[in-house]
Length: 303
Image (cartoon, rainbow, N blue to C red):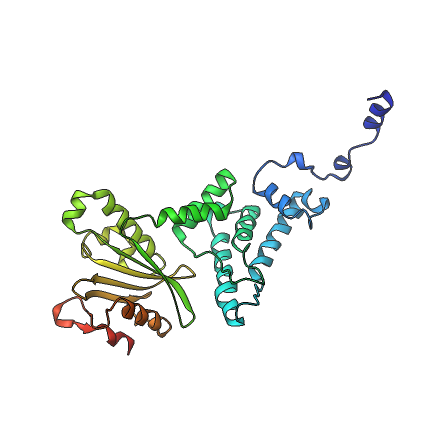
């Protein structure tokens, strides 16, 4: 470079110094830089170069995505509201309240952007099914390693469902969509022989029970009255456990059949889901009750 060129560099201040804005090389790799790259088309330097302005922009963009109407030409207006918009809002609230996302609007935006990435106007796609335990671990991995949220979430989701003997069945009845998780808690003999499988099964049932008031939220409770019992738990597509059936499939007798609130009757909203499950598994003639003296027909719940 000529002496004239060098003198010009010393005389003409850099644009970033003149304006007080950051340059890209001053922003380290991470969620903030990922967001700048993702929104290059709409972010001007006066926004991404100013950390305060960028923080505000990210927070506003998060709320914009949360409250957007995810229309689809292949879904009814009701289905869009119920199965797209409402679930995106639940996702947003969970992300917003997650401890790993605290004070990090860029991580929040990166995750929510990934959640809605497939919700196009010309398809039937829905947001990922919510699993709170998987969500917590996935956010931690994304924050630590800067990896793709969706890839990380689905990888952990598959691992979560890897327990031998676990059966999952997706069901949609009367506009209610969710998944039945069916698994047998080992009896005392099997638990003593295979403590690893026993503990993993207890952990799974406990995780599936979160966001209800069931005693099975505590793994310790499962070691007492539930040994050797079959569990069927319905989780709706917002991640809430809505029905729990506990008993013995072979005898057609169940100890408990309860809704999200074990002290209240099962909501009419979920009776269709229960009825379809009983029908598909030929449980219409089954009975339930904690003792022989108070046995009732399972069909009485649906009355």
